[in-house]
Length: 488
Ligand SMILES: NC(=O)C1=CN([C@@H]2O[C@H](COP(=O)(O)OP(=O)(O)OC[C@H]3O[C@@H](n4cnc5c(N)ncnc54)[C@H](O)[C@@H]3O)[C@@H](O)[C@H]2O)[C@@H](O)CC1
Ligand SMILES: [K+]
Image (cartoon, rainbow, N blue to C red; front, side, top):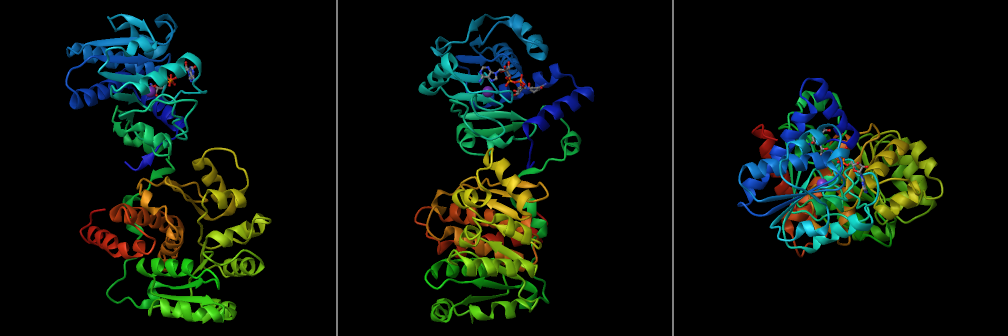
């Protein structure tokens, strides 16, 4: 269940299921029942206020209220608008509710031990304002736990953005598959624990929608990990060329350690002669060569992956080296200064992309390179990958990995400890190390983001960038043992 459905795909899944013979009324009954089950499995009978909006999210609320009351729970129900104005399945289920329908005001919250938020779900179409905003604030001010249906009201299911104000939920029950807003910030934080319930939409119908958005995790890429065989030679595991700066040498030293721990067979740092001893003394397993030999070394196809950016310096030299590496069609990872060097002429960079290329911008670098694109992070990362022809890792707590072919993964491993200097350099190194071993660009980028996040999460407080590469062997061992035992 790694797929994420967009909001239009979710509506289409409902539609195809209804065309296949399961009525919308039954889907709504199933949705309401699944929420009811979550509530009764988590809480003892208590006073519940079910807050219903004017659409089908509100319709779910009528089902939940009826089923809880049938089980003897004290339930109040408030509706935004009039029952007569409800349509379709929501109207059908509203008419099965035999209790009072109250006006939806903050008075609904008085005496409630539990609040069920069915005000808006997938159909939220504008910001929440005025009385409704007051209601949402009142929900958030009260201590009663909140169960949100589909998404917390005010969270945009497509982007995770807050539309005006939003409910802070303890549990969110959504249906069939998660939506982007369950994984993208700030929505993810407002969902609380997210539960995805089966309401009768078949896996075949989901597959027929060809989902392109995924939650990043081993089941997405573990089959593509290029584990060495018994007869593997170091050159089978690739040879990374990492272009080092003269002033800022720490960045590439960190990246180099990441690439080697990720499994690259060999790694050579190229730098101007004054800096070479620093790189050489940093780790005995690292080779060094003068930067002047870059083009010559690139003629050897065994040098199959290039990392340019960390500490490289912004300017003409970096630009030329990036273009040369791209023209040689080697796997390339472009980070930091390699991206910023093309601020004024991004199309020169995009035009040169031909082989496996991964760009790893944070928000600032992204904006400088791709300009002020419209839309949320997911939309922008996808557009950037399409425009550049490269796999783009848009870094952040909810890092997004987008491929030019439309596939996109959202990071699900949160590790605030990674917010430390050098952490991004290590990530770029890990990607390069995986590419050097022949992993495809999208899979390598996804795996690197996962390893990086997991390393941060496992290490926890006190982490510095140097710790990240050293956490990789343990993580890779786990993946290796899973691969050997056939469990992903
Ligand atoms: N058959 C189906 O389509 C199913 C739908 N389900 C539920 O249906 C929901 C989607 O239903 P809808 O498409 O009716 O959408 P919603 O119920 O989320 O909201 C739509 C209504 O809210 C109003 N609205 C939107 N934003 C507003 C704002 N900021 N201020 C005031 N009014 C606003 C719209 O004008 C419209 O009347 C899902 O989230 C899910 O809970 C489930 O019952 C499963 C089956
Ligand atoms: K809701």
